[in-house]
Image 1 (cartoon, rainbow, N blue to C red):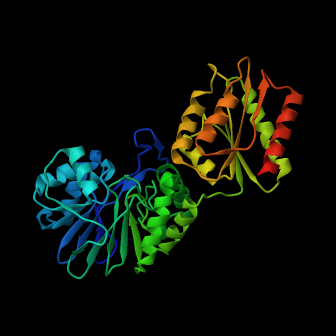
Image 2 (cartoon, rainbow, N blue to C red):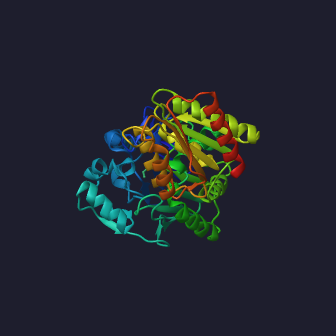
Image 3 (tube, protein in one colour):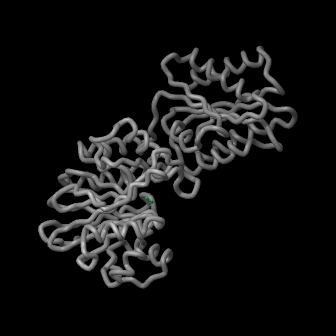
Length: 395
Ligand code: FEO
């Protein structure tokens, strides 16, 4: 059912407690998510975004409890990935002539998904829609994170509807950021930024600065996933500016895969050396085949440097590391240093190949890496420890 969040705005979305993966299996969502949709009742009535396809009927039925659908004057579609546009078919079946306000790219995407000839109205940055006492102003935000994305600012109640921007995959019945565990929310907001938005960081900085320059009063930021930023909404804007600017903490992360434990032993010895060289740095170790890939990527996002380890297999590196490397490449991390390590039996190609591919991904590889034959003995592990020390000192 709907939840009134201001005198004129009611949240009419869906809280999805059981969602565990998103984008197919691309993104883990341990804490569920929500598909936030907002109903604005002024002299005119506008609906902002809908819900994901599996909940389309539930969404429309719940919406009917809030309003006679024929009283909706405008449907605003800020971004048309199916987690937000998925209930459009069900909704538009009931109100087929209601105009859908979206960017030109948004119209193309809706047409490409649903193949319907609805009443589209294309909007651009600066276009406005008067609802009576309040006015909506549209701001295109292409590639944050799709070409069609736009934000919507509501005057009077001073709300920025930001769609995926500032969102988190975080299910809560409480809706507002001041009513939930802020550590959890920030973990999920960072994971969301890292895995979905990081590659578009230059656009994020530009768009945030453009919006800040408008000097709009801001009471609330209403994203399309997770909590509404009601208490000090600018906190997440300021945090985004930090995250978008080659973010790093004093952390070094080691990620490895291992077949018979040799590469794991190397990882542990390297980590020991790093800690001996720098007692203040946070060192974390993950097994790429066992730990969650998106959590690992978020740890790399937080790190000033990272190490990747893989045994040589089939003259290359492991499946789990290959998948992770592809994601590192895609997310375009900036100003991170790295090195590679791994055990081998004969060809021993993994370390060299990993180093080359990390460089191709824009990562600064600080040395040639270290590899050890078969099972490392104490002397070999001592080498690894020294390698860790030198790595930490070189940062
Ligand atoms: Fe939440 Fe890009 O869809």
